[in-house]
Image 1 (tube, rainbow, N blue to C red):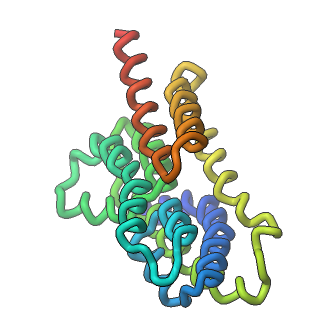
Image 2: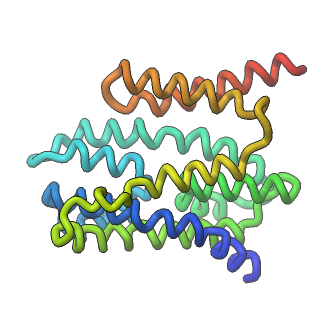
Length: 226
C-alpha cells in the first residue's frame, strides 16, 4: 500500500490543477444545456479533457453525433502513442492488470508514471500508477459536476483565471521531464507543426499532426545519432 499512497501523494499538485479546469468545463457544459448528471457521466466515462472541451464547443441541439464521435476519436488518438510509450515499462505485468490500468490513463498520469518508471530503471510500479491515476480520475468528474452547479450562479468563471490551470500544470510537467535542449527538439517540432496545423486546418487535426511530427523528428534524430 505504500506505493499506492506514494502515487496518490504525487498526484496531489496536479489534482489541484484539475479542479479549476473541471469547474470551467462543468460551467460551459451547463451553459450549453447539459445537466449535472450529463457532465458527470461524460467526464467519468471518457476521462479526456481535451476531447470533452471539443464536445462542449460543438454541442448543439439536436447534437451532431457522427461529428462529435469522429472528433472525440481524433483528439483522443494521442492515447495510442502514449500507451505505446508506456508499454515497455509494463511488460512485467499481465494483460488483465495492464488494460484496466490504461483505462485510467490521461496526459498527466502518463507523464508522471513514465517519469517515475525511468527513475526505477524502466519498470512501472503498478500500485504507484493506480494511486496516481485514481486520484486524478476521481477529481475530474467531481470538479466538473460542481462546475455545472456553480457555473450558472457565478456566470463566466474564466474571468477568475481558472482556465489558466491546465497550461500551468502542463508547463510543470514539461519542466519535470526536461532532459536538455537536444532531447527537447522533437517537442519543438511537434509544437511548431501542431500550431501551424491549428491555424491552417479546421478541426482537431493539429493533435495527430503535432504527435506524429514529434515522433518522426525523434526517430530522425535517433537514427542520426546511431
